[in-house]
Amino acid sequence: MRKSLFLLPLLSLTAAGLVACSNKDVAGGPGSITTNGSPVALVDGAAAPYAAVALRKVNFKASEAVEENALIVADEYADEKGHFDIKVPENGEYRLTVTHAGAAYSKVVTSESFASVDTVRLEPTAVLAGVVDIPKGSSAVWVGVVGTDALVKTDESGWFALSSIPANDTLQLYFVNEDFDKSLGEKDLFVSPMESIMLDYRTAVPEDTIPEDTVEPEKLLQVLALLKDGTPAAYATVALRAADAKVEEYAVQNTMVESDLRTDKNGRFEMEWPKSGEYRLTVTKDGFAYSKIYKAKDLAKLDTLHLEAAASISSKVTLRTGTEFLWVGIYGLDLLLKTNNAGSYVLPNVPANDALGIYFVANDSSKTLYAEWSATAKPSSTEFLSPVKVLQDFESDVDSWYLNTDSLKKGTSITPAKNVKEGIVYDSTRKSKVFHGKYKLAADDYAWALVGTSFDRLMNFSAIDSVEFYAKGDGNIRLSLENYIDPTKNLKAATEWIKLSKDWTRISVNPAELCVGSATEETCFTSWSGVKGWVKQFHIFVQDGTEFYIDDVTLYGALF
Image 1 (cartoon, helix red, strand yellow):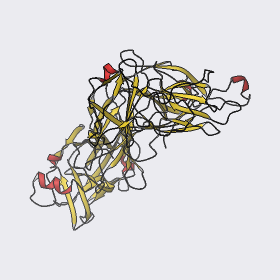
Image 2 (cartoon, helix red, strand yellow):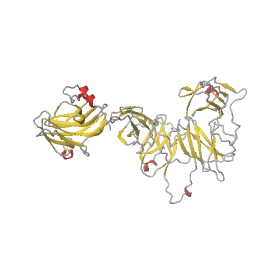
Image 3 (tube, one colour):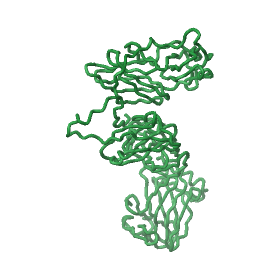
Image 4 (cartoon, one colour):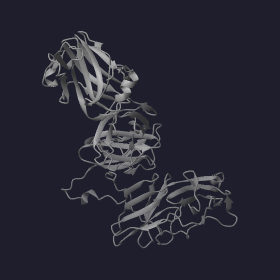
């Protein structure tokens, strides 16, 4: 379920005259008819056979209290190929509505504007649930959509539902008392295809009627949302989420946020704010967005928001071997998608100029957090970002790193002997903590000593760009990525030996340099291809010296 937050009452019930309109107010009449020939109704590019078609005066309202859950009662139907003949009077504005299997087209037209139309494209409808005040002495209120036949009755608590609302056009809801003889006002409405929203149209409780011990949430009045050119962001989507909120249902969602409410035609909105915590406020409209994280106390200070062009982010995450995909989302937004089987993904239509907390979730039943990352994009851009994974900087947690030697070679040793933590020292040149080890190898070409780590799962490193670390010492060093499970299953891809010096050296290794494998003769291609999809160990070997230092081991193009 979407986290909808704190809608303020918007409806002000006003006394008005009797709602009086002729039955259906169907357009037409001798001498008043023009025609557009035979336009075609389409759904997703395909014909909408036998679609229902109706034309109503633009201000049409039901003339009697008869419940009608359908958007329209058809005046006519399209043929099997979606073609229909529509007659539009020469003077005035009319609402043309075409419906078919949960999709609708509904626009205000004139004979002139519709004369050149040969195609109407139906889009999925939306669902609206709402609540209104029930006048004293009444048990219900009638709710309809101006220009359509939809008319429903609330329950005794004022709740109603309109199961089919046309999208992407400004509509008006109208409200009539139970006896259907007094207007209770109108409210503008704008929805997106497949949107499901709840709106509170009840009047606010006067402050002098609120008990003194009631804690009222802070309220932001008339926030103005503007597009980049300074025009109001009319009917823009507005959503408030906890800053660390993740989606609650794992299904692909390409929308940045689902709306809690919308701005009015002047780009203004009202919202009640929570008292504590951090929240991401997001306003979106037609490819533009404003999205920032605020402390609760700062939300009420907002006045004007400026939307900027949205952006896209393309990147990748490192999958465990055998993992088909991961879910990718952004904290505080409703956007959710899947990676491909190589871990690549594109986040379309995201807010620009703000650090976005990207999270990755396992695709199994546990839905556990797999990894996190932060990224920022510029407006109107597609950012192709390569992630970076600091495997070890020796500043804090080093428990997963170990030291090892060939125990079969007498005279081979490494210190510290117990764990990497005992070898952590501060280096004034690096201005950070580093690892310092000492070693002695037996007089044997196959004697070895190493520092490294073993991954919990087999890792697919096929897409990594490079491995970087800093080192110094008086011998040689080599990087080796391995899949050592037992003596019969020992795959590795290593560099040639690299000479160290007394000065810190940046060592950068790309996969093309991992040329040493388990066999005596092996090409660079075969050594890396044999292990890249099943890496279990990350090892740094040393030889021909007595001591070495290691710092900031980093994988580029990797995230896990």
